[in-house]
Amino acid sequence: MVRHSSAENGRWAPTLLSLVPHFEPGLAERLAKRLKRLVSEEKEERTAVNLQWIPAARYSQFWQKMSAFALTSYYDGRIRLNVIGREKRGRVATSEYNKACTQIAEVVADCRDLFTGDPIVEEIYQPKTNPHEVGPSEADLYIIWQGNPVGLSHPKFGPIGPLPYNRPGGHTGQRGFLSVVGGAIFAGSHGRASSFDVVPTIVELLGERPLSAVSGKSLAPRFTSA
Image 1 (spheres, rainbow, N blue to C red):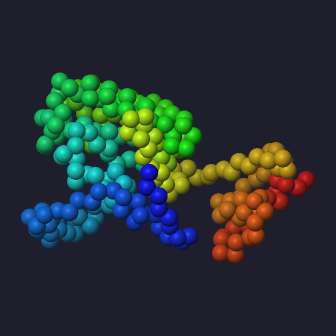
Image 2: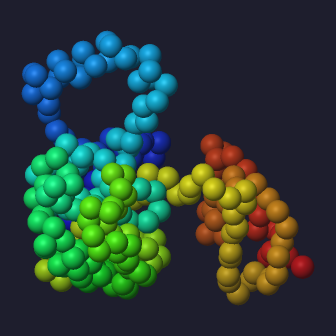
Image 3: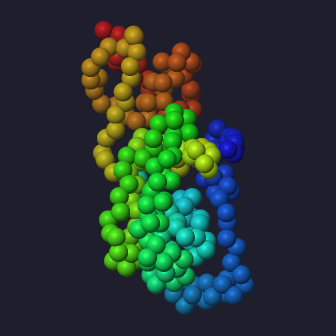
């Protein structure tokens, strides 16, 4: 387990990406990439999407040397095998495809939450048994996570993480919610508020002084008084 600290207003991304292997292209590859940019720079600017902030994307330069790898994804887990005859530099024979999928699924299913010890997998499914029916951007295995683990532990391979999320939410949904439970808190719905009010609310409930640099106002008066 690797431990790192970050300043209060620091960014996690540089620290997290420093823990992931970084591929240094050779001279020929750099020249080819530069030539491609010169030829189609305008088009590339319109269509390119930078996914390097996702740790799994940092391994893309090593995929050709891996039997299986994680595709970049936001919510579920997606694993693609490096199949001979499907990928340019395949490593897994078609005859071994289903066996390899089963082995990977078993390894993932054996993982537990690093802090609670609970299983981290709700479901693992393999949509197709013929690898050559899997599209070029599809995964061979899909994993539905259970809970929101920031680290995992495997009985054979040990702990991995913790790896804090780059952001606490996604791009979908118009509203969230705050659920607070305690002896001095009145049950029920207490209306709508800004998401910026969450931090001041927690600060007040902890009995700490208000933070002048934090936006929003405490919602505690709504549910701690009649």
